[in-house]
Image (tube, rainbow, N blue to C red; front, side, top):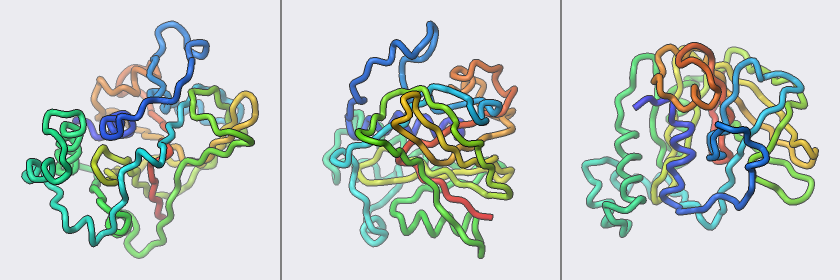
Length: 264
């Protein structure tokens, strides 16, 4: 399976583990005929949209703390096998049925985390924050400093996580000469992050967007994959952006629970 689709797959498949319903909202007035009704699809953008004043539909998903799986320490995580060969043991350990949505999602996560790297790619799964940080440093930082970026929502009153029209209120700032790892939370009984990047690099930007009513600002990273010639021709991004497959750069925002590691 194409690893570049992970941003959306991690965002949508994690619902299997929490069975969390999307926030009640009527977004039909925002959508034109033929557009996607699933708000989670609205995280992609064209490279030419990365400019001051551009307006686009975006959905930044929230997670209720009560539905989030526990975050284990490295010591705790290392005591639990993390391999597909132990799937039956793990399902029994967590009291999850093999044929349930949660069981199928666990299997998918274990399979994904055991994929071999393809040429030009680096990837790993972190089962604790300590292991993820160590692996991120080993992968992209060497002796360089490493920093983390996440998407943040800043609201005047009540925060709304519905699908909104957002406008770039500042010129996106490109982070030059940066190596990036995007880490996406996977569906699992405890927190697991799938981290991946490309040795050819992606262009990374700091962005600031505001809703039409001006009451809510979103700040965080956006990544642009400039060469999509090797992507799966059925990649959902091409459909959302209505572009010829493999013909143009694809940019995307990051869901609120994603972690982006950066190093010079």
